[in-house]
Length: 117
Length: 111
Image 1 (cartoon, rainbow over the protein chains, first blue to last red):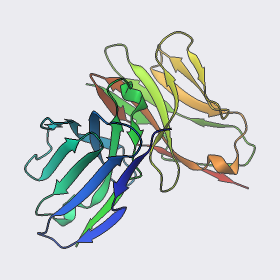
Image 2: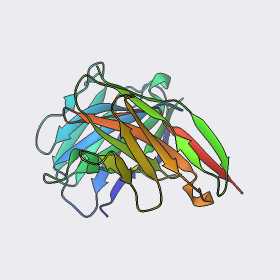
Image 3: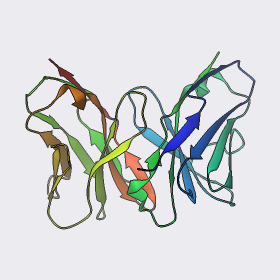
């Protein structure tokens, strides 16, 4: 099956700094990538959807200036958490799909755990 | 608005025992329903799906789920679990180009 990787797998940063998370599709072209956020013992919440070469579409309540998403190529999307605060600490998961892949068959990365101190 | 509710956050069970993980959804329109599994330190994987047709769907590793429209449920069952089934299970619905997930159920299989 298709593989999606995330880097780093975990990161600790100080409050006020920015951190970038990478999401890569290793063996397919990802025309669409999704970014989710998961709090402990809670469901995955879709943050934004990005199509290659276009601006990301953010879900209601997600601050686009805080969570910068770039999908510059068919194999890479990045999520940058700007001016991070402790409440941004969470598990961030990306997923990806090609143009001819159904939504429900999107491939998920293993996630990145962000801790802001 | 759509929502997905998984009624049990944790389900401990002994090996070879049957298990049911419950999922209810609310929607005013027809939906597609899914179960995903997340093994430790891995991404979510599609376990099975209901799109249309037979209300009973099966996976290759012995899980099955039944779509019940009147009860708006899509419970996941397995007649005999293995240690390797220990994982987090997510129920999800698809609408408007998005997946909406339940809170997840942690299945813990003990020897």
